[in-house]
Structure formats: structure tokens, C-alpha cells
Image (tube, rainbow, N blue to C red; front, side):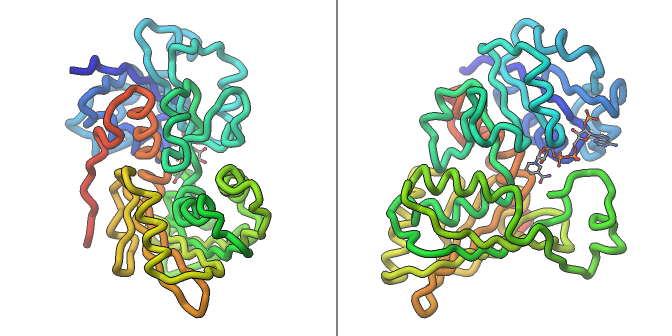
Length: 328
Ligand SMILES: NC(=O)c1ccc[n+]([C@@H]2O[C@H](COP(=O)([O-])OP(=O)(O)OC[C@H]3O[C@@H](n4cnc5c(N)ncnc54)[C@H](OP(=O)(O)O)[C@@H]3O)[C@@H](O)[C@H]2O)c1
């Protein structure tokens, strides 16, 4: 029997914080020791994450962070705050190396300050040894899982084209013109074409597997009028048969519990509310099309973070993550 892991969450009132709580409160080896929130200090967690009524009596704490992270017995800390806040927190606090830090923001994804990029399908062994983990971005996860087998086999021989659509929760809880129901409903739009911030971490991983990879990654991100999920459609020239490509993907993801190749076309609802990534391949006139679907808040964020926690603490990778999709 594994001892209970004592966990702290910082920035707990947002979307990824809420999703993390939903998973950790049902994790067999986790005790949530505290959930810090600047905006909701003193309020019951269920008053913000209202579906958790009946699941927890925890209150958000606004206590001094230096005191909270110095508490005896704290095993891991999840950082769920917005861009830049994790870097500030780490600069201002001396966190013991005995405490595992898993950051969901983009602040350390370039692996500075001893952070390891937390994509188990790329580098599970490095994550198992890490004390600081930078959880990947949501688009970045779906796109990388579509490309890693090709990069590993040296089969990325030309530019990569990507169009990917995300649900509105990808933008966080704060209301903005582009997350307002009136604008988002019955609407589709693109943003940050060819310049999305996740391109850097995608290239970092691809060149880790194939140091010669220097081709363009032409990424057009879309905002969808649904709340959760990402579909990425990725294509690139491929000189080989479809069966050969499928074998490449099956071999690469053998032993990875969440990433699966489907012979049938995939859709977002198959993976919403799960930590899975489903992939589907098609070959058209020498272009290999890879469709990749994930839930932006689970495999794209909080589920992925728990997967990394499981790896660091030597638990089976899918502990607490055998989640049911909504399906329809
Ligand atoms: N959303 C996604 O799909 C996704 C996927 C991958 C990575 N990420 C990354 O994860 C980090 C957190 O993302 P997020 O989507 O959780 O952002 P969010 O919903 O905007 O929450 C960010 C922070 O806002 C604060 N906050 C301030 N006022 C609030 C209010 N009225 N209600 C709720 N929270 C409030 C919370 O901190 P306090 O509790 O301290 O006030 C919370 O940690 C970001 O760095 C993001 O880039 C997000």
C-alpha cells in the first residue's frame, strides 16, 4: 500500500485548478492538503467548482505561501496560475527539492531552472527522475502526439501543416469578447496564425528526436464554439504505405496507456473528460494526414499533470485517470 501523497495546489479557482481537484479528490493515493487562491480565499472550494458539492469540505486558503509550502509532509505542489505567475512564485520562494513541483503554465517549458518537459510519450524516464516538471501546453500535446513517431523515425522530411481547433475552456475562466457566449456560439474563428506560442515547445521536442528537423511547422489555430476538447489535423509528405505508417505509430505508442491509434476517423467527444489521445491516419497522394483529439483540460492540462505526478512517485501511470468519456 502506497502512503498518501500530500498535495498543494496554487491558483485553485481557475479551470485547470478545478479540473485538477476533480481528479485528485478521486485519486486513491492523494490527500489534498491545501488549495491556495488569491481571488477566493476563505470560501468553500465547492462554491466555485460547484459540481464538487458533497465531495469536499476544503476551503480555499489565502495563507502566506511561504508558510504553506514549508509545511511538514508536503509531497507535491501544482501551479495552476496564469502566464508568468509560476516564474514569479519560483523566484520568490525557496522550495525544498523534496517537494515535487508540477507547473501547468508555459513558464518553464524550455526546461530552464532544472525543469523537465513533462511529456511522458517523449521522455518518461527523465520525468521519473525529475523534481521540477513543466507540463506541456494543450495544443502542443495534441500536435506533438501526432508527430513524435515520424520524428523518431526520421520521416519528417518536409514542412508540416497543422490546423487545430480548441474549446472555449482553453482560454481560462475570465470572460473575454472571444469567450462571450454571444460571440462564440455558432461561430468559428482563427487566431495567432503561424505564431502561436506552443510552436516553440513542439519544435523543441521534434528536434530532440530528430536533430536534423528544420522544416516549417505552419500552424493555424481555431477557436471552436464548444467548451472542451481539441482536434488537430496535421499533414506532411510521407513516402511509404499507410500500413507502414500505422505500424510506426503502433510501435511508438506501445506501452503508453493513453495514446491510441484508431482505424476509424476520430472525434472530440470520444476523448472529452478522459486523459486519452486518439490518433487516426490517412494517406492521400503522398500526404500523411494525422488527426489527433484530446480534452484540453485533461490530457491537455490537469490529467496530464496527474500522469506526471504518478510517474514521479512510482505509481502506475494511469492511477486515478481511468476516466469515462461523455461519448454522446
Ligand atoms: N485552460 C486550458 O485548457 C489550459 C491547458 C493547458 C495549460 N493551461 C495553463 O494553465 C494555467 C492556468 O490556466 P487556467 O485555464 O486554469 O486559467 P484560469 O481559469 O484563467 O485561471 C487562472 C487563475 O485565475 C485566478 N482567478 C482570478 N480571478 C478568478 C475568478 N474570479 N475565478 C476563478 N479564478 C480566478 C485563479 O487564481 P487564484 O485562485 O489564485 O485567484 C487561477 O489560478 C495557465 O498558465 C494556462 O496557460 C491551461
